[in-house]
Each structure stands twice: as structure tokens, then as C-alpha cells.
Length: 340
Image: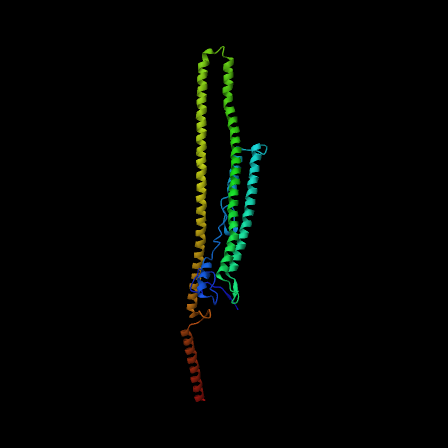
């Protein structure tokens, strides 16, 4: 004889996995329920923080994608070409980011498959059939549960370790990107400084060549040099301020885009809800029109048969009319017989 364990047929206890086996002594019942009182030992499987899952519409913000976007914007902003060494280095870093993301997703999916197989195994234990002569004890079921938990714990630890390694690799690549950016900015600043100082150097050279003839203008030239240096300092401070404003505007635009996306999602959800309500109202209107049309024909809806039929009063009235017509015909026939 076989029977399924069911958690609702013994003592109304909805937190146990199985019913107590038939014939289990009363002194062992408490041990049985204590061993099986926690049925969700693995818990809910949360989504991976850095892996997309289209089936559940889970699209987290990936650090690798964010860093790749920054690389692309930097290349575009500084007009780097294929011949530039910094462009080649940034391209290599971008390729490493792609490989890192793919490897991380593959390794996380391997751990997810292991955990899913353990969940299926746990589900099989919960629905295990038993025979009266071969009953699992509470300790047997607890050992099975503990064995599955022991197998799943390393998987969760491996996932945490993989995420730490992933973030560490992204941090290393981000540091490399920052170093490359610093070299590009340094070279750009050096070129700009050289271009700004070239007129000054030419002017100083001319002053040196004309020193013998222009001793009286040395003071004026020194004053001019001082004004140029002050202008350069002011210009440098203005550049620093403009960069700060640009960064603030960039962060503000990111925040606005995030709010805009949230608004679009809410608008989409509201549109779906409105369409559902419109369909329901249209169905109700169609049903009302059909009721009115059937009511004009004195028909009612039979809920038992799911069909329309003539109202009882209408049937009775038509029956009486048919009966009166038959009686009139009979009377006319009797009158004809009397006449003939």
C-alpha cells in the first residue's frame, strides 16, 4: 500500500514536510516533527547581481558595461584614432571586460545549475512516497535534508567568491583605464601648454636679441610677462571650474535619465491596466446589449444549460393562444355539422 505524505491531514500542522507515518508511537512523534519542521531549507534563490536573466526580466547594471561606456566616451571626446597607443590599450581593456563578463556569467550559471538540481532533489524528497512496512523516520528525513543543504552551501560560497573575484578584476581594469586617461590628459595638457607658451618664448628671444638696444624697455617686458602668467593662471582655474561643472552636469543628466526610465515604466504599466479595464467594460457592454435584445424577444438565460430559452410567461401565453385557436376551430366545426 502506498500513500503520499501530506502536511494538512495531521494535527493541522502546515509547516511540516510530511504526515506522521501510520503506526508511529506517540513518544517518537515529537522527534519526527522536530526533524521536519523547516521545509524551505534552501530559501528563495535570488537573482545574480551581475548576470542578466531575460526570463525574469532581470537586467542589473553591470560594472563592465559601465566601464566600457566610459572608455567609449573618452575615446570619442579625445578623438583617439587607431594609430594612437592609448587607443590600442583602451581597446585591449575593453576586450578584457567582454571576456571577464562572459566568463563570470558562465561560471555563475554552472553554480545555478548545481543549486537547481539540489532544489529538484529536495522537491523529490518532499513528495517521496512510502510503504507502511518501510517508513522513513524523522531522523532519516532530517539527514536527507542536511545532506542537500551541505551540498548547496559550497555552491553559494562559490557564487560569493566569484562575485568578489569579478569585482576585483573590474577594479584592476578600471585602475588601468584611469592610468591611460591620465597619460592622455598629461600629453594633451603638455601640447596645449607648449602652444600657449610659444608666442611668449618668441617674444623673449626677440627681447634678448634687442637687449643692447632696448635696455629701457626691459621693465615693460617683464611686466608683460607677469600679466601673461596671471592670464595663464586665470585660464587654468577657469578650465578646472569648467571641468567641475561638466562633471556635475553629467551626473545630473544620469539622474534625469534614470527618473525618465522610471516614468516610462510606470506609464507602460498604467497603459496595460487601462487596456485591461477597457476590455472588461467592453465585455460588460456586449453582455448588456445581448440581455436587452434577448429581453425584447422574451428570452432568459439558463445558467444550468448555458443557453437562452423562452420565458415561462411567454410559453404559457402562447400555449393559451394555441389552445383558444383550437377551441375556436372545434366550435366552427360543430356549427358546420349542425348546419349540414
